[in-house]
Length: 442
Image (cartoon, rainbow, N blue to C red; front, side, top):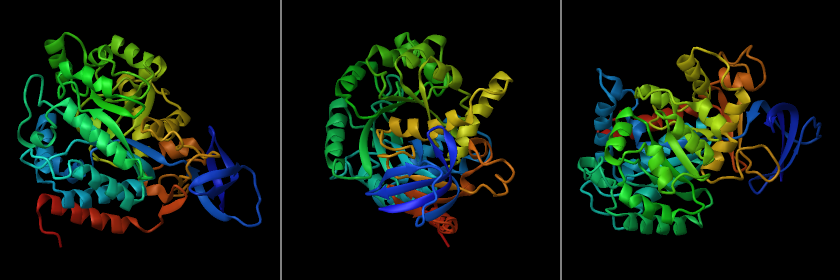
């Protein structure tokens, strides 16, 4: 057992002073505010639970900055993303994912949901081990020191009625049955891996024909289920033309909306869509920094929450890896859309990034500084150039702090990030991105 005295920590729904926590076997065994123990390791700063990044495409990290050269659209960005996907092999993907996950850890992220669809070789043929690329991601998370929910993704078509082509050949298992059999094998393999769990995903309603959705629903169980939903107006229009209903209604009609479901983006919704999603008690994974980078739009976050949905946050394409920025962007984007302030309280946004985020990834025992929970801690500097003078409460964490203010990070009782590591992570990222693109790195 190891005892730590947290100078000021987020416990329950507020910051408390001098919180004594005892950690054993990676979990909190006691949490005592206003303590004055004779022997405990002091932890200075503002301490919050570990953050959950509910939507990641690790290989997109190689795109940062490069897609901003010249003008373009979502679809030209997608072409560049396909170019990266076509280049990946198990070795380059391990290096890139490990560096990306290390960047996440340094930003206070203790668990990530990896929306994984690069399953096959570039020509579409399977690896000898059908889950080799997924295993690479599991290994990358282990080396970075964070937990992983591998959201193994079904991808059967390029668009409504269009077969996969180009880089998309790497994504497709060919049928729901082949995908499900592979995911079941993965789940068995990960049952013995303490830092990873297997989830399930459908890429989008354009990538899986409606006729195949009932077979997906038949396979669902308690595992997390994620799906991109209504990210683009074009997707909604094409879905209406193909099936006569919105993507949200299509999922609901086929039994794919429920408490274990997470809908990624959910940007362009009708009133009926919002009622369906809220009534199902589903999670909604908003990714504001990616949504603004791609010009997707601003989703109705407050209306979804008020209807019964649970908000979570993701960094998606990794244009930015900073969940503090994602938290405040939810509120700030609502202000832009409505020309009004005061939609989200800082405490609500912290819940989205911690408790609800972990729950959507299947880690219901994480996301809070409480007895029995996993011992994850994120130490935020309250006196950086960004946080100085902002107070020592949730407002400072959500509306002033950034990933740069994270000083130390504990995952499952083990310190995985210490001060001074950012330079090394930057060097690793530089080398991994250059290797992915086949560039010289000096």
